[in-house]
Length: 258
Image 1 (cartoon, helix red, strand yellow):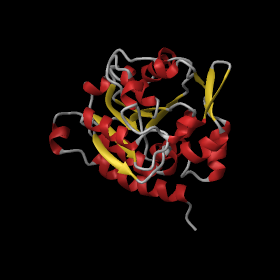
Image 2 (cartoon, helix red, strand yellow):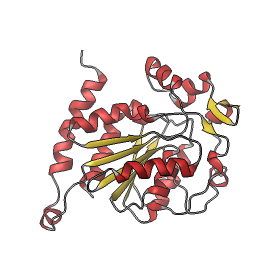
Image 3 (cartoon, one colour):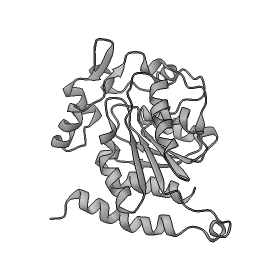
Image 4 (cartoon, helix red, strand yellow):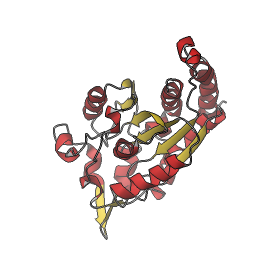
């Protein structure tokens, strides 16, 4: 029996041929080339390993991939970590953010080597926007009730993590992610961005239709507001784990269009 991971990597290898070598003739004649660097930014209640399935798919087709480890202590700290990763890239780079990572890439995405932004079930605040007030206009996701705090940091309870955050992820993988979840500073979500990089860079967005951590209609609103090339996935919040081939395809499309 072929495993889901093997199937995903084989599928992505086929997609990569079209995405990375099938550039429009006008683009080729202009002397531009596809981005072959990808920097991935994880969200709250996660760490860089949450991108593992996507990393394997991207590396399998020859892309240079860096997964940021956000401290989740403040927006400034997370942005600094992302900018350090971007500074190591040689050439055009796609910057992708999942969940809270969308806020980070919205602030850090104006780096000169960033040629496109990919948002996955992600926050995408405007400059100076009160994101909490915006989110309050949409249904409250069930995961919110599962946040527990200790010592000024928050995390998801085991029940909320498995049911609402990683609901469509195989249980063994979900338990591993739960054990490695990133604890967030109590003040993390109150921070406001000073810029909105999505207003200045091409954007792509993956909506999770079964999301229980971020309201799907909020995701649709954010994608429409930024004018993103959008896909909707039959997925929970962690589409980067449950649908790695689809997320990889989106990133490859962004890379080819850079």
